[in-house]
Length: 134
Image 1 (cartoon, rainbow, N blue to C red):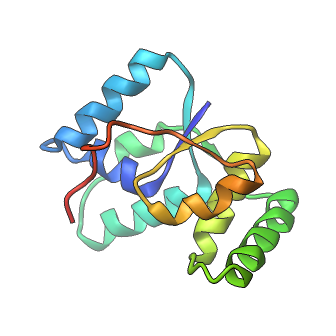
Image 2 (tube, one colour; image 1 turned 90 degrees about the vertical axis):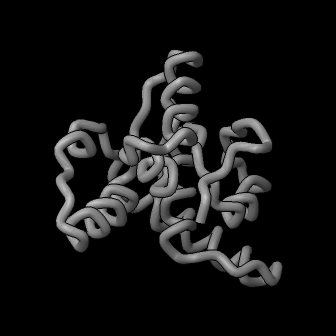
């Protein structure tokens, strides 16, 4: 299964995004199930609602919930990253834990998730020139 991070979801929801189209093509090509996390769902829904946009499509996507085992792993991931001098958001550690604990790959453009690969997080790599514009 592939877990879509917030940045990937935003690109997919943007009907004018070439990156979003590439993500959808990639997902269709690998033929794996796709989900997001309840944390990502919150992040994207917050942004949509803040700007008065609809969220119907997003709500059809399965969301993996944050559980006790994820809390345990995410706290470890966050502490290890801090000790290594890497700045990572708490929610990124939480998302990484959900994906890692379910043996899912995470599709993201956020380089901060690299800090968690040494603990078994698998990241989806799209072509090098594929990145959302800021």
